[in-house]
Image 1: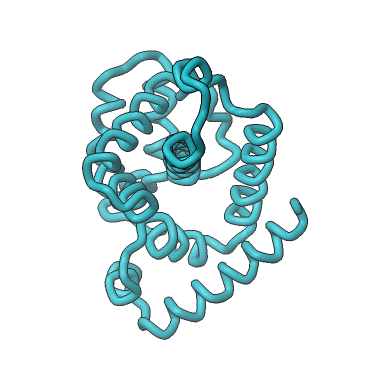
Image 2 (image 1 turned 60 degrees about the horizontal axis):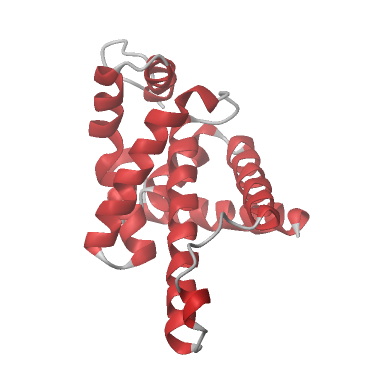
Length: 193
């Protein structure tokens, strides 16, 4: 991705910011928050459908970034890592909602209903981590143009028209790239299953 006035590409700057966040630098965390909040909130809201819940989950995402920045190994783009956290938080919230719904529908003994929920099933967590790692590998194997398109169209969820405007390409090119990216992701994910 090209930059203006010799600035470091956002990915490099984001790596630096994550390294600073790992050292508990609140200014760096605030800069990442300012840069990613809108996109992460939109991503989460599209998946969960409730603005209040999306706000809560988005806050959890940025708390997790603060808590876990040292875990970022640099194997993927920082944005991929951040949206991966958002995806995990959405999946966890969806599981919580399903469990709550099940409790409402299925009559349980009072003692079971009052028990605190346990940690996520380790096999589910391992499978989710493996799936995310595979998605990251597929995304990293894309050309830089495809990665830019994927980030804007798939991760941030921008309309194709806006992606085309930001990247300076036609909307048809965006549609073609997204179609190819989705095909690569489907093919890559079939390897995991």
